[in-house]
Each structure stands twice: as structure tokens, then as C-alpha cells.
Amino acid sequence: METATPRTIVLLGIGHTNAHIVHQWISEPIPDCRLICVSLFPSATYSGMLPGTLAGQFDDEEMRIDLVALAERAGAEFVGGHANGLDLESGQLLFADREPISFDVLSIGVGSKPAGIEQHGDSNVIVAIKPMQTFLTRLDARIDQATGAKHHDHDDVINLAIVGGGVAGVEIAMCLRQHVARTWPNRRFDIRIHHNGDRVAEGLRPRTVRLIESILRKRHIRVDCNSKVTEVRSDSVVTSDGREHAADAVVWATGAAPPDVLATLPLEKDSRGFLATTPTLQSKTDRRIFAVGDCGTITVSPSPKAGVYAVRQSPILWHNIRALLCGEPLKRYRPQSDYLKLINTGERKAVIEYGWLSWCGGWCWHLKTWIDKRFIAEYQFEASAGSAEPLALAGARSKGEQR
Image (tube, rainbow, N blue to C red; front, side, top):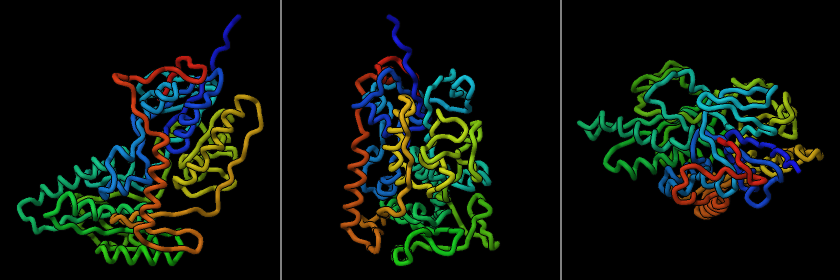
């Protein structure tokens, strides 16, 4: 009796949504299927804990998911590689640095990149917030370089610019104040946010915005609104009003733009270049392909590019992958209209917004920390000793390929 050839599920990018698939596979592998996880990095950074790690509240490893260990625990194969295309006719994911991988189902969750950064080339002053896996290392290297250049006069101020005054930008700015005070205690730093909008943290309620603005003032973090950065020089930035501001390091924390890999995929895009999907999270071009998290847009009901939506898509994606393979009805993802917002201020306090409530306090930080640690603990495993490569088992526990 012949054994059926296992079908292959490929996860391109292991962010919040796709990581849930790997986690579910540990206890509920889909029969006669193999799972392949593809990622540029061997670890994933949980965005909710990045600011707290910057502020010294967590160790670096506490915010990371070891993707090799997670794949091994699921009996899946991890493949590190740079995807650069799709062959829809043959059902293959193409790579710049390895042989193609065939798929029966493909879930793309490659996130986003900061908007506008490509206009400034390869400036060594800019530190993009993504990829988050290397953000802290790149940031410290740039600040070390800046402090070294001014080592003759310790009274010289090190100027740090944050480009982007959304929630992510202000959270990074507040936690950066804690980071530099702890890491370079004998140096003076000036932190300035450049925001191309009327007020920081747009999208939050006016009361919450006022609360955040008050904290920024108390922390001596300057804010320039309606201040679009049009040029980045070796020691300054130029804004749309023609003014030049000193900047020894420029943290780029703007809103979401599609990552470069999406342009290589022959799939329908929305007006901004993200992958266009139906409410079932399937590509409008090919029903075998899902696009989740920041990189996908449900065209009939687009959501903000925020991690909370990626997390809420997880159970829908898991159900729909199984349903597609089994020929069963798929579920529609319906974005929530509101959600709990917790913003780390960098001093073991957090701002909370939920319904009518806007507040800042230590209990808000403890709540955020509890939620974050509880979430990431589900995905943290240790790889087996000496396992340079994860076990190539999945589903029916047969060998697979992954990233």
C-alpha cells in the first residue's frame, strides 16, 4: 500500500501570527502534512517588550523567541534564507541563496519596514527600528560612535533624533532616555522627536495624548510636530520648514511601509504595496496563499498596522489553513473596534488607555509586564544540545524544508 505524499505548509516570516501556527503544531500537527518555517533571522523579537528591554527592565533574551528551538519542538524544519519570488504555476517559493521550496499552502508574515527610510540611502547616522532583532546592537554602536567622536569634551551634548511621533516613536523616546542615562552616565543627551503630524501618539484619545505630552515634557524630551525630516546629514537632520537640527543618531520609527520582498511577489497589492487579501486572510490572487500581520491588508476592512491585530488573526489563520487542506468552510477575520493600549514610559510605569480610562502608574506597567511575559513564554523553548539544525520532522513527522 502506497503512503500518501505529505502536503507542505510553508511559513514565510515567523512573526506574531505565523508563530502561533508553529506553537499549535506542537500539540495538534495536521495529519499527512509537513511544516516549513522560513526566516532571515534565527530569532524573533517580541515588539511589545522591545521598549522595556531598551529601558533595562528586561534582559535581551527575555524578549526573544528562539525560532530554531520553536521549530524543533514542533517537529518542523527551520530554513534561514532570503526569499525573492514566487512561481505560482509550480507552487514554489524562490530564494536568492538556496533551492526553491514547494508548497501546498503558504502563509506570508514578513511584517513591515519604517516608512520613508529608503529616501535616505545607507546613511550611517540612521538606526531603523526594524529589523528589531538587531535594533539594540545597532543603536548602541551608533551612540558609541557619536560619543567617541566627541570624547575630547565630555560637556558636548549627544543629540538623538527620533523620526516618527506615533505610539512606537514616543515609547522608544521615553525608554531611550532611561537607556542612555544608565549606559553613558557621564554624558549629556538631548532627545528630540520629529513628527509629521499635529500631535504625537495620533490615534489615541485626546486625554491620553495630553498625558503622554506631559510625560515627555517632564522627561525633557522635545517634540517638533508638523516637522517632516526631508534630509539626513552626517550630524544633523533638515525638516520641511527648512530648519537644521543637530543629530548624532537618528532613530527611524515611522509608520509601516511594505518590506522590499513584497515587490518581488506576483500577488495583488493594495494602494500602499501591501498584499491584498480577502476577509479569510487569503491572497486575492491565489487562495493557497495567506498574508497576515502588517504585510497583508484586508481590502474591504483594512486595519491599522499594529501587533495586536496580528495576534488576533492567529486563531483564524490556524483554522483556515486546516480548513483549506480539508476542504471545509473558512472563517472570516473581523477586526476589533477597540483594544487595550499600554505604553511603557521607561521608568517602570505605563500609560493605559481602555474605553474611558486614561492613566499612568506603576500598576499599569505591572499589568503590561504580566501580559507580555505571559504571551512570550508560550513560544520560548531551548534547542537540544548540539542542534545546529532543527529536526526535520513535521505533521506526519516527515522531513520538511523551512525558513
